[in-house]
Length: 159
Image 1 (spheres, rainbow, N blue to C red):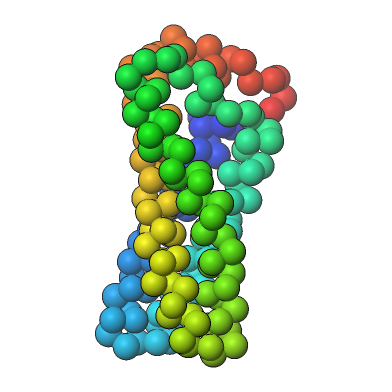
Image 2 (cartoon, rainbow, N blue to C red):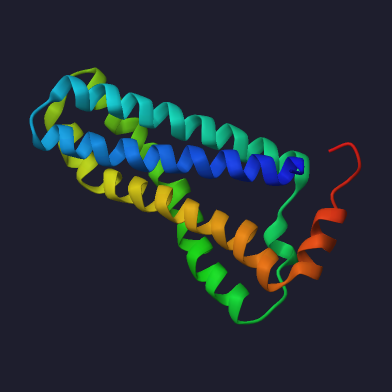
């Protein structure tokens, strides 16, 4: 597995883990298991932070593979998934920070108001992150093997 593909797989696993943890945390809060909810959300935050670090490093080291997708129906669908994913991923960061701060300082009303919107967006971004991975590293190579192989060859040596 090439470095770019390895990081993509790691990122997808981290997104999947975040998704599972976010859902578990939702179940815990509904059952009023506050400690389990808090621990699960901290783990989701760690998983998402690890994802972000790996994602940023992989883009720095290997570039952006999605630019190599040929124009057509697949790229259009890919962009319809990718663009809201990226916009929401960026926009949700301050809200997650506010939610974590509110929980840490026990400002529960603020915490509840923020997570009412931040949690579903975070879940959406985690799930669509997995979809983006599948489209870019599973479906794209299957539909366009020559373009995918050329994209991998374009990665600078030693990356």
